[in-house]
Amino acid sequence: MNYEKLFFESLEHSLKGRYITLNEVEPLLSRFDFENQVQIIGKSVLGKPIYQYIIGKGPIKILFWSQMHGNESTTTKALFDFINLLNSNSEIAKSLLIEFTFCFLPILNPDGAALYTRENANKIDLNRDAQNLSQPESKLLRNTFDNFGPHYCYNLHDQRTIYGVASEVIKPATVSFLAPAYNENRDVNEVRTKAMKIIIAMNNVLQKLIPNQVGRFDDSFNINCVGDTFQFLNVPTVLIEAGHYQDDYEREITRKFVFIAIVSGLINFYENDIVSNEIGNYLNIPHNKICFYDFIYKNVKINYDNSKIITNFAIQFKEELIDNQLLFIAYTVAVGDLKGFSGHLELDVEEALYQNSEINFPILNQKAEFSIGNSIKFVDGLIIN
Ligand SMILES: [Zn+2]
Image (cartoon, rainbow, N blue to C red; front, side):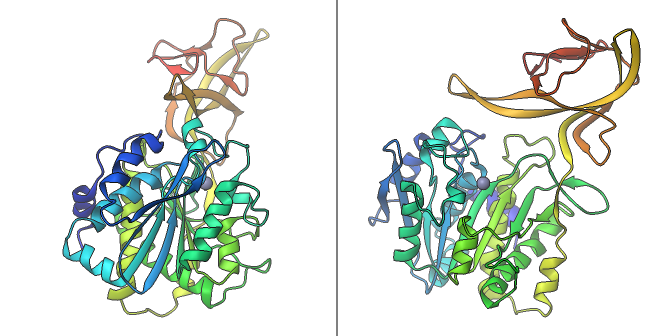
């Protein structure tokens, strides 16, 4: 299977970048609504529609939802790439539609998507609301789960650039997985094993394309999380986290790997024989680890209080919605030896001088506003050169 080729044939060109809202997604949904397959199942806190799209006639029912965290849009892009594949009339599309019935809830949290926030408009994290069901979006997800009766669930997220994979060479965690626990003991039962097997199939393919850039999330049990609840209710649930790929802050490359994970996991259902030692293969996926900053400047000279020090400091982007545009604003977040951390961009400035207009010392959690030597300059959190 040439997954890369399949991706480029399926790519939904109209969805780009990190700021993905209903405005971009609604025209696509209306394009696929030829047999009443698209329905509005309810409204968000601010009255925005929440859509469900069902396609396929197969016996295995899979429920996918994306952007329950509004600012986590990469998997929405990958879902529409996948939906394009399903509508391509290709052999693989036909096979998938015979094997499966898919139910998609793209952008479960449309208010958060518009505001570019993790939480919904009531500032509730929907992924901590699986028991309380206090929010309309949480209730709609749970109703869909109850009515559709999936055999499997795919819980789709983005993770921050701080995550790397804990292997010998530290690489960014471009895609991370979790088969959530269903109890405090983190036991492995038949249900959870099914989720692990899908992840193993996805990981086998991804490792060939992005070796050592696939991580496994911590499986601490929290029944308030949707994945843990659905696993507890005996439906195997796979959590996918789209993460950072080198220089890909727009996550246009990462979306490809999420697409490939989805497709390879499904093909595995009907093409591959079950291999032995599946659980071991799942546990062999290295852990996710917080070990990255976006930038690290090393050996920076700082003149402060009449003394000179040589130190390192780290910059992290925050995505901020300004005039309806998403900007990556740089903040100074750490100063010191930064042991155990790498920078997605790391520069040894060889004792070049740090300067800013007020105090010549980096202040934590402030917008980057400084220069180092002649070549590096930030103004109001934006890189000038
Ligand atoms: Zn999330």
